[in-house]
Amino acid sequence: MVKITDVARHAGVSPSTVSYALSGKRPISEETRRRVEEAARTLGYRPHAGARALASSRSNVLALVVPLRAGIHVPVVMQFAVSVVTAARRHDHDVLLLTQEEGEEGLRRVADTALVDALILMDVQLQDPRLPLLRSLDRPSVMIGFPLEADGLTCIDLDFRAAGERCVEHLAQLGHRVVALVGSPPEVYVRGTAFAQRVVQGFTAAADRAGLASVVHPCEATPAAARRVAERLLREQPALTGVVVHNEAALEPLVEAFEQLGLRVPGDMSVTAICPDELAAGLRVPVTSIALPSAELGERAVELLMRKLDGETVPEATLLPPAMTRRASTAPRTVSPR
Image 1 (cartoon, rainbow, N blue to C red):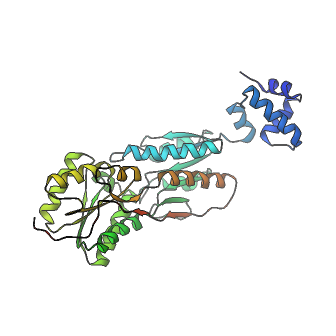
Image 2: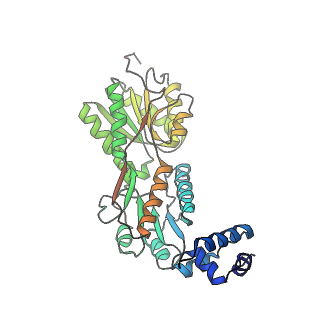
Image 3: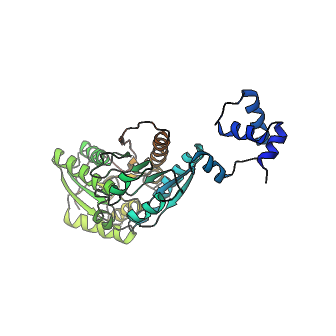
């Protein structure tokens, strides 16, 4: 293992000068700093993480708190995690991923140690039980999601209410008069998960404004459940011609179920979704969708944390506007017997 004394010998300086040059704690001439950095690169030297932490009173670690609860679509969660890790590494930070459903206890366990400098929390609930503790911590935090009472917190997310509205508005512009939302698994709504509730709010509000008949159905994340929901929708809403899907796992099987039931997409049924772009674009019938900007959200959450760690003032609320991409799954309504 290369030691700081090796770098000092290679650069022709003292070990303390190497330390100052690499940490920036004391002014060093530009020529000396370059010589030290070149020696460190040549020898493959990296400061010991524990030593860095002691020197800076920081661990250079962020906690990403994302409890893997029932109903969560893990592939999407992992997109967020990869984005956070990638952005953190650009700031020379590592990420501690906390996936257990521990609530306040898990936060306190991390906060009471020197394990992490700051926290990012996901899967935010409208009435999130972690909020009182989060407000009391001496460590910066950012929530990817908006609880009902967000005062004093730093939150960022896609504007899910606006996303639900935009999908309905698109269908209304195409002449659809009866629409349905096929939503997340039931347990997601039971928990009061914020993003899912806001999609329902936006969907319902936009349908009411446009005078559309509308219905909301949660859906388990299985092909069999998607088939049951499709059959129920057609049985209970025979005039249905437009569907919004907010359930990544159910999107493809739902489209297939409609087609197996004799409906053409988009000839008889227009389908929109709120989901990752690559999922919507990769289906046999590419789906008109609002993109889920996991990469941007993760990156911006880390940037907000870095600014807070540097003592900067950051906005409490950041809402990303929804961006719709029109694809082959939506078309003007046609009236046909069923």
